[in-house]
Image 1 (cartoon, rainbow, N blue to C red):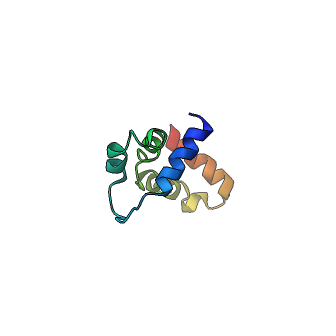
Image 2 (cartoon, one colour):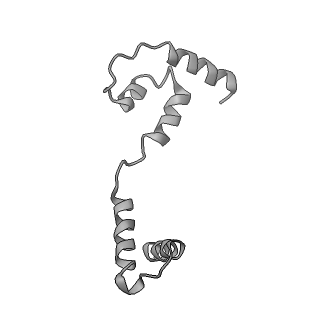
Length: 89
C-alpha cells in the first residue's frame, strides 16, 4: 500500500453518495472490495471488534467483591492492582 493508492481511494470514497446511515458497512465493503481494496482490508480489523460490556461488568463485579467492609482502607491504586490480578488469573 502506498500513499498515492490510499489518497486515490480516499477521494473516491468521499465522492460517494451515502444516503442510508443504517446500511450494513460489511455489506458495503463486500460489494466494493475491488474499488476499495485498502479500505476493505482496514475495515476487517475495525468491524471485528465485539461491542459488549461483559468484560467491564466482570471487572466491576471483581472490584465489588474485593472492596468489602473488611478492606475499607484499600486505596484506589491497590484495589486496581488486586482486581486486575484476580481477573487475569
